[in-house]
Length: 85
Image (tube, rainbow, N blue to C red; front, side, top):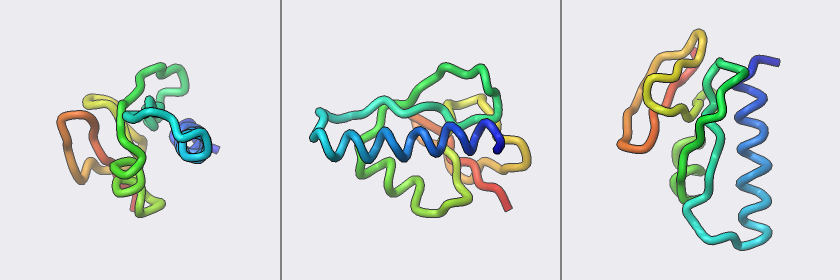
């Protein structure tokens, strides 16, 4: 499993737990880049997280962080959205 997939899976658990506990938003999510030593995070609402991740080929990253084999398809002031073919 690639680092970005591990981070994405962790974020899915974060989102599930945040909903369950009704945590105050925005929620800190992990950067889903390919750097296994990355500690960056993104603050997003659960709604915005769900919109960005509607396609399973997409990864949320901090600006300047990359996902190997992916292309940045959208940039936001808070994150980049990368997609693998």
